[in-house]
Length: 120
Image (cartoon, rainbow, N blue to C red):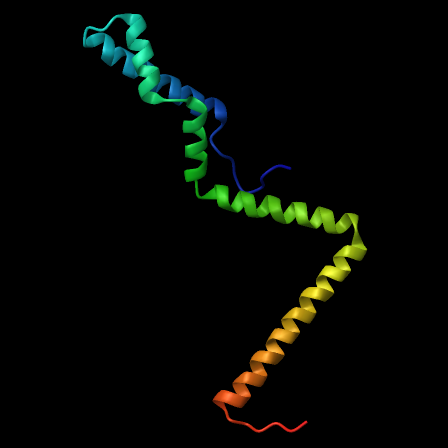
C-alpha cells in the first residue's frame, strides 16, 4: 500500500549520505597521516553500520508514527472486510462495553457528586 500523504527520503538518498560521511571521515584520517586502508577502516568504525543509521533516521521522522497508524488502520479494515461476522461482533462488544462504562460512571456520579437518590 502506498503512503498517500508524502514521501520519505529514499533509501538510496540516505545510503548516499552515509557513504559521503564515511568518505569525508576517511579523507580527514588521510590528512592526519594515516594509511588509506587504515583510514577507511577507522572511518567505517566511526560512522557505524549504514542500515542502523538509516533506521535511526526513519525513527526520528515524525511522519513514521502516522504511517504506522495508517498502515495499522488499513490492515484492520482489510481484516474486518474479510470477516464481516467478526466485525459485527467486535463493534457490538465495543458498544456494549462503552455503554456499560458510561452507565456505571453516570450512576456513581449521580450517587456521589449530585447525591441523587435513585430508586429502582
